[in-house]
Amino acid sequence: MNKFFAMVLALVLALTPTAFAESIDLTGTWVLEKVFMGDIESSPSLFGLSITLELKDDGSFVLFGYTREMAADVNGTWAMEDNICVLTNQKNGSVINSSFSAEDSKLVIPNELFTMVLAREDDVENTSPAPLPSTVAAESEAAFFGTWRMYASSFNGIYSPLPDIETNETLILDSGTCIMIIGGVNESILNTRFKDGGLSLYNYEYSYDVATPGTLWLMEDGTLSLPTEYGYTYYFSKVE
Image 1: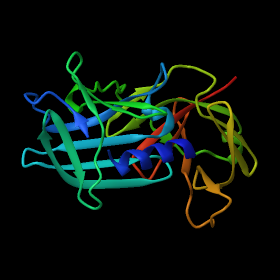
Image 2: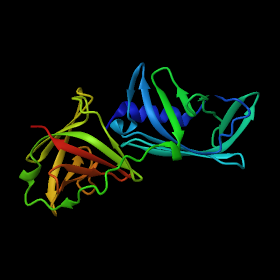
Image 3: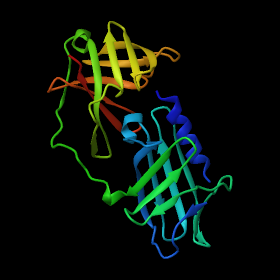
C-alpha cells in the first residue's frame, strides 16, 4: 500500500519532547483525527493510517499505530518537565515531539514533511450511517470488474466518509488482476482470485496462501467493501 505513510508511522514511533502548559490534564485516550501536508488537510483513513495514544494517570503511556503495511506499538512513561510533556520510549529512551492547542484541545505532532492532529477519543464524532449495507456473495468474478473509487472507511465503529475527489484510492479490476492507484499517481498491480463469492487480492511478491491486502466483497447497495487484518474496512463505489 502507501509506502510514504508507512514511513510516517515509522518516524512517529521513533518518537521525539512535547510542549504543553503544566496545568493541562492530558490523561486519557487520543486518536489521530487529521493529517496536514503543508496547508492541505486529509483524513487519515485516506491513507490507511491510524494512531492511538493513551496517557495514563500512573505516568505510563501506550501508543499504537499502523498503516495498511505495518503495525507497531510503543510503551513507556510520560511526565511534565519545565512545561514540556516528555514521552519516553521504554525500549530505546527516545521521545515524541508534540504541542497542545488550547483553542481546540488537540495534540499536534509536527514534522518536516507533515503534521498530525490528535483529538480526545470522546471528541471524535462517529458519523457511521446505521446500518451499513450487508455483504452478499457474488455469483462470479465479473461482478467486480470495472473501476472503483474509495468513498469511506471505518475503524472501531467510527465511519469516515471521504470527499469525492479523483485522488482517492482507485481500484481497476479485471480478470485475475487489480490495479491499485493511490493519490492519482502511485500504482500497484495485484493478482486476484474469486473464491466463495469474494475477490481476494494478492501481492504477487507473496504466496497465494494469504490474501494481501484482503478480500473484496460485494455489498447489497452495489458498492464494495475491503476489510483488513488491522481492523479498517474500506468502501468503494463504481466509477461510471
